[in-house]
Length: 203
Length: 433
Image 1 (cartoon, one colour):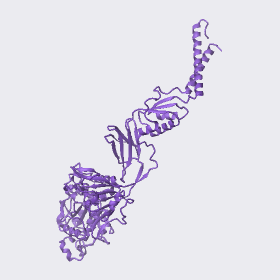
Image 2: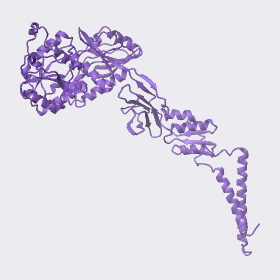
Image 3: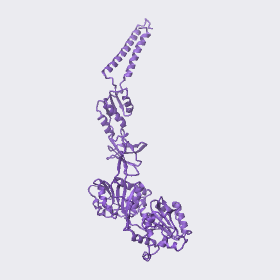
Image 4: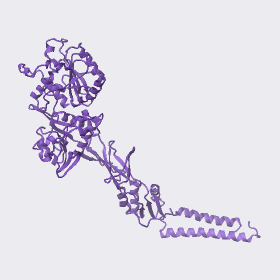
């Protein structure tokens, strides 16, 4: 059986590689808390390549404007339609930021308007319990970016099922650390990533 | 008035009158004899398949027949056959001739919530079969050595399989009551996409998935594995939760199971099958143009065992095998990561993946069969057997003649009146008393 592989989306525009530490820390958390069969390292996969379909979990982030090519749009649309899970995180944490504006435009063009994920959604209980919805990041609490604590995540949903999860909370910054650094923190900040991956694997 | 100068014509006319009078008298005597002797129950009749329905209505009313014969040169409805059988049992000798092909058909519902029936037709090899339901033609095929099989996704309750002469009519004898499916595996893409495919197909899937030392993913209020609740169990790997102890007894008591080859490593399942010592066939990149999508999947070859039937093979290796274990059915699956077919296959990959998994489950699933009260209407699964049962074997001799119907008594009486009237009129016109 193929192990779970954390895949980061490569796209032609913007800075897809801005969250390069994220894969390692998510894999570390999955290994700490679950018995999932894991690939020890993440992969980067171009979203206009056939290889995309070998990785049903895809993480996409950046700071810069996102404009998908026609090939990227076609592949991404097919990917989600077939059951792939796309997690998009705004690395700016800024509702006026160019990534947020352009990425949500692209997602809306592909899948329709994003909907608010209710804070009692199964995503928040798929492994760890988050009764108040998505955990706040230190960037939100320190007033960086748009100086907002975003209460909800949003997404493309089929009924109650999330196909595309969109975050303004800048988890990419929150999880950009060496996994070994987590031992200095009281609570592992990447625990919520376990919920996201387990949700993608089970719903 | 005849002139005295024409004696020849007068003699001829008298002879004509005598003849018509004699004919009328003869017919009257014939009718009297028939009514007294009881031989006037009716004439013999010989009809074809096409004219049989109208003849049956006639034979069963005032215009009875003494003996009937049917030339079976086309379809005879079960209703007409039953009517003929009743006529025969009520005392009218009935026989048939012809050489209709032996034919039988069954229409069995598939254990699949999305519906469909599996139609099997038995006939001599090379027989052309046309299949239709109440709404029109479904398919046609020429039978092979083992007859012909159709899968009708529309799930017709009633079908008709026609050859040149006879038609078999079959109805689904019962409807199905589905249980749930239990999926035992570790959390992973295979468990996710197998559950998704089967749920999209209409199955209700309870997934118990190993996830962490903290706990497993399990449905709320999950029940124990037994045949009253679950139609089948699917075990994808040996790290599945502790329910594995119940899998063997569940199959033996009549449950259905699909076990992926990695799960056979679990000691509790090792007795149900074995993997081959042949090396693992590695997964390959998916060729989206490939006509054999499972050719790109990794494969753990299944070891051959007595009593095991290979359903699919790749090269010389068994990829999918089936076997019976006491009252239950088991399919062992050698393919790995079938989810790749759904994600990376051709445009119809998701649909084909769903159909393939649904087909595997339907081949083992235990479903309750609930009889249909109206299943017997217009059903004749084996028309030649029905014909022989109703009328006996084809007549070598003794069929009514091919001359058609004898003249009925009403017509004879009319002829008699006509002759008498003719004689009387002729006499009156020449002035005779």
